[in-house]
Amino acid sequence: EIDNVSVSPSLCSDVLRDPKGAMGLLSKSQTSDASMSTFDYNRRISNSSSLGDPEDLARREERKQRVREKLERDKQRQRQLKESNAALASQLVKTTEKLKEVDYKAASKIDVLEQELHETRM
Image 1 (cartoon, rainbow, N blue to C red):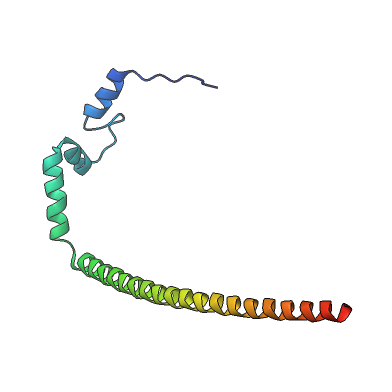
Image 2 (cartoon, rainbow, N blue to C red):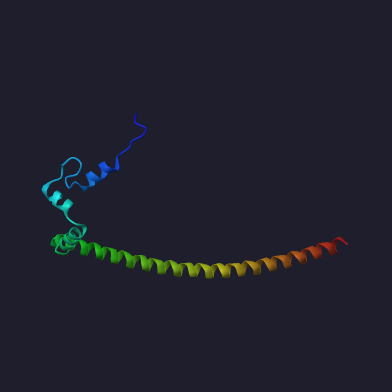
């Protein structure tokens, strides 16, 4: 069992600088990619994606459309939820008012009954 593993910084930098990698296993196209500057690589990627395969472009457009449709559905659902929330809040206010009214009437009735009971006992 190995507890401590130490890698020399010089070994790492040699591996990172070597276009073939540590084992020399890269293919010819990978070797040319590895030796390219970041700018050249990014330019190559952007050119290849802008000139992409028509099937890729069609899939991207379909995906964009699906995302737009989902976004629209989500916005509509959010509007519905806001409307539902407002309706429920309004209903809660009305119910609270009604409960207060019923509670007041019940308390008044209890007071009247207690008074009558007190009078009959005397």
